[in-house]
Amino acid sequence: MSPRKAVDQELTRDMIMDVARELFVHEGYQHVSMRKIAKQLDYSHGAIYYHFKNKAELFFALVQKDFALLDKELERILKQSISSQQKLKEVLLGFIRFGLNHQSQYEIMFMTKDEEVQNYLNEGPNRSYEKFAQSVYKLCDHNISVKEIWSVFLSIHGFVAHYCRSGQSYDEVQTLAESHVELLLRAL
Image (cartoon, rainbow, N blue to C red):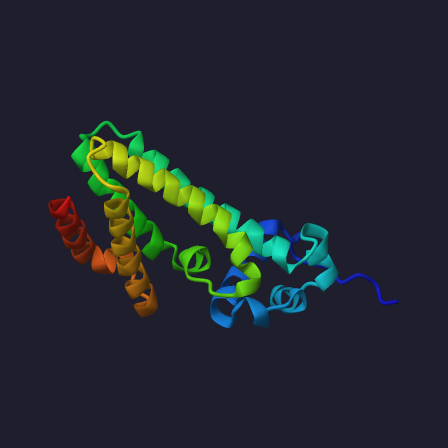
């Protein structure tokens, strides 16, 4: 048995998750193995199993972490001391900003189609959507239907998905994002 390879830095869950996220986005869940992730990190696959029991658990950890980031952004906006109308605008822009500034995370959270991982994706989006929907409902003084909230969500999701495909950041499309949100607000 050869001696253990010296490493420059200790392998962490975050290091594994960062590499796994990029591989999942670019190659798809089915085409990524724990060995491939380990190879990309230049560690043994056993080192990854120390942190995650399997690929599904790793994927679930990614999804949980990403939805926590989105929820934190929503909570930050809702705590601001601004009018309800301005808060509503900021919630919609915040969702777009999150999606375009965290494109790899957004793709895993909302655009992964792999059937094997759909079960891991159902809980996070449902909880985050529920927070989003409740916030929009309250900020509209309870004067908005479930269908209208869903339409607003689909509209901003479509905006983010379109610009994720082009690889543009929020800063590059900020004016368009603001116009899109203003159009939605006028419709409400």
